[in-house]
Length: 91
Image 1 (cartoon, one colour):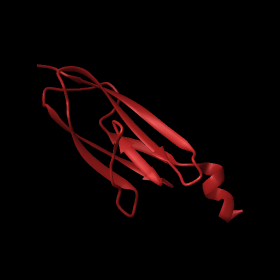
Image 2: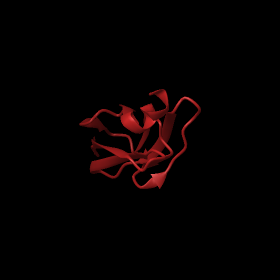
Image 3: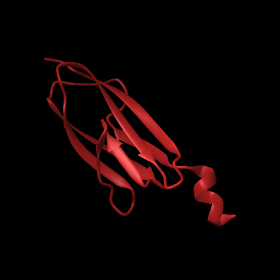
């Protein structure tokens, strides 16, 4: 049963910052979160790295107005999960 748990449960993705609807005036933002059982992880279609515990932290540049941040994970069985976060950068 434990050997199949990774296949049954699939990858997990939790973006801890920023929350959906976050507003800022800063052009730079650090996206943080946790990915479990992930073989591949990307942020806005760019591969990123995670530590041994699955934590990630990436700084991205925001354009003025709304920005959609897409976080994506895939496990070794090809199962996927993604998350979209909408961020507003005011001038």
